[in-house]
Image (cartoon, rainbow, N blue to C red; front, side, top):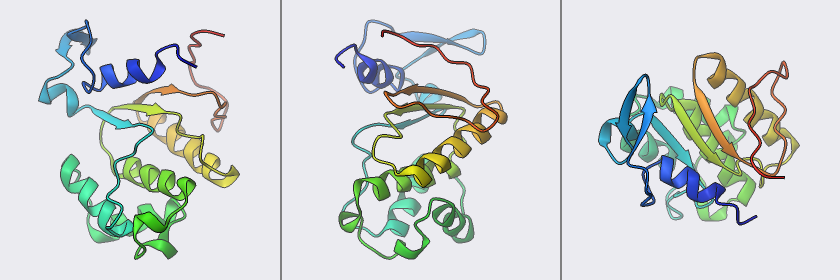
Amino acid sequence: NGSGKTTLLRALAGLTEASMRAIGWNGSPAPVRSAAWRAQVAYVGHRIGHKEDLSVAENLELACALEGAIADATQRRQALERAGLSSRAGLAVKRLSQGQKQRLALARLFLSHRRLWLLDEPAAPLDLDGRRVLAETLAQHLGSSGIAVIATHDAIELPGGRAPRVQVGG
């Protein structure tokens, strides 16, 4: 706690002012506050940013529109089913538990075509099944040449057990 994990992720996402102005990406410097950089990044932090008065389905549709993700109603419905939220699609987000809100964030990731995922404590509010869905989602993303930087206190066991890990601090 207090080692700067969230600050690092927010800086990488271009959400926090930091002394670094660019990061090496695909062999070239990429300004972290540029639109080109942000188009590569999906960030899920502690405050996920759902609109509490909108339904689960409406939140997913809005998130896709804001990200520029092309996902039709069938794909969004499938993402909610995969996240275990299909029966709650019509509910206002304010009626969901923290774990269900995190599952909605996972549904957003399912539809994201961003190469770099920055995840801050993604497993914390999830139950065992939700953690399994998270692990499967990460494994699929990493298996398709995606990259994930995850700040977590919880071990995330990926299927196959193979993922490069860097541990900072104790």
